[in-house]
Image 1: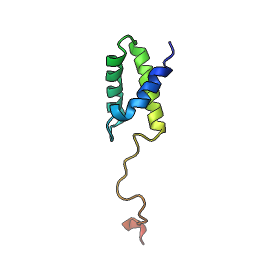
Image 2: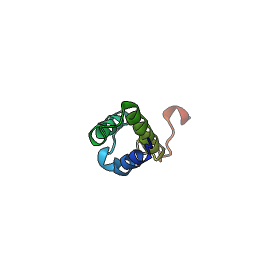
Image 3: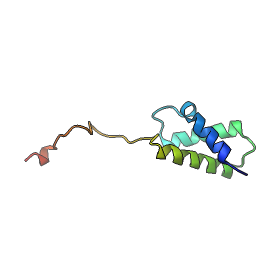
Image 4: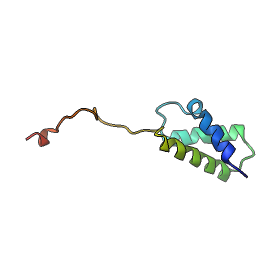
Amino acid sequence: MNLAPFIADLLDRSDDLIPANTDQVAARTLLLEELSLEYPDLSPPQRSQIVSSVLAQLAADDRFGWEFCGDISKDELAAEDAD
């Protein structure tokens, strides 16, 4: 079975399905739930493969981003480096 249409469908709807600032674990759960509802005839391994592909693409597009402490654009030396 060609899974590309399912992957494309979830990617197209990912902004609606996955709220902003959602981590990958929560996103995986949301996508698996959506597949179960929309495409109940897919087997669990097919669903897993689709979700893995969608998450990989979203991660490549920096959907999940990085969390930083402080202002990364600020050029500030740490106290021990200021000597």
